[in-house]
Amino acid sequence: ASATATTQVLAQNLDALLTGLLLGPRAVGLYRLAARLASTVTDLSIRSGQAAALPDFRRRRDEAQTSLRTRILRVQHATSLTSLPLYGVLGGASFVIPRIFGPEWNDTSICILLFSLTGIVYAVTATALPVFQAINKPGLLSFANLVSILATGLGFIFLAITARDWSTPSQLAGIALIRLGTTVLVAPVILRALEKYAEVKWQSLLRTSASGFVAALAAIVLGLWVTEEAPSDVSLVLALAMVVGTSASAAVGVIILIERRRIATLVRNRRSSIS
Image (cartoon, rainbow, N blue to C red; front, side):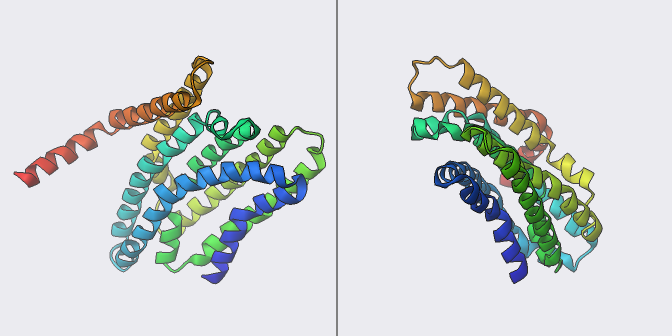
């Protein structure tokens, strides 16, 4: 477990460390703002659920395999409905949020957008951490983290060679792309491990996350559209409220549309239990 925790910390912070070494304190400050915004969404919508799911997964581990598999898919479905729309709202507001902090933070806009996309990819494998802990396979996470660390290091070597003359926004976007690329690279490794050791097919995980994916995409697209079309004389607070409100409404609307049958069933069951 300690090895898993160590590699997890390295995987999560190596990019920021290398950013400071290669690009200096200003770049790492801009990068850390984008990372902090995305990690806040992760903490609120994913990590709390992971901690709550672990005891349940451990209890179901000794039952029939179908019980654990069904519970994993239900947890993944709930996680996708809460986390993916939030990442979508963050991405949709990525060009407005930095302006709230001041013009010196504008260079981090693309970085925030890319971090929201990274969060969307990460959310697909969000249940892996408590699952691997429940089935006593923490080494699988260590391996995935090592792959991430290696890919991040190689990406920064490439960036250090090719991006010396890039502008600060381009350099930050390159670093965020490395983070996104490593997350995309590691995701199939984790999905394959879930299929092998927990008998959860990757198609099932993607299918149960589909509503959240579509909601996140709608939130990003409409948020960016409102940002582009908003009058220039609108105050920053109002512009942020417009973008966040539009993105959130789009996400909720998509979820209600796609999940309407499930919602109707839940409402009927709730009414039956009350009566």
